Image (tube, rainbow, N blue to C red):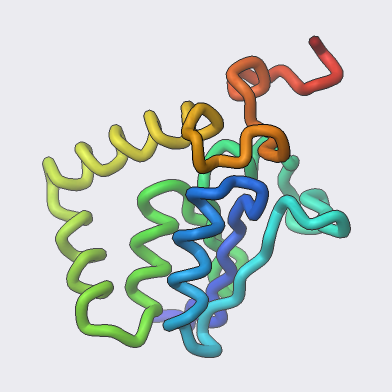
Length: 140
């Protein structure tokens, strides 16, 4: 099996829910996991062969070989990399048929509507109902 580390996690630091969760993972992660804030002023999505809209739609993880994982699969890769017995088990559990479908469905709903959550810092979070449908703030 090829080495997947370091694993790079691309997260939206302008989203309160997202940044809180990533802050927890950062506190327990080791050198195998790197975190990139896509809301940072100097973040350039094109450097990674993607658009900012791609990254804003859902969590992304990229392994050392350049393979991307998105949504629940990105979380599963992150959980597998954390030095805790709980998170790798969570990854295995969310990979089970039925459980995986429910997790992907739940995450898709969250990702689409996260900008509506009170803790999402809506004023700074670039995801709105309009651009979650593919429109940018400039299209309004």
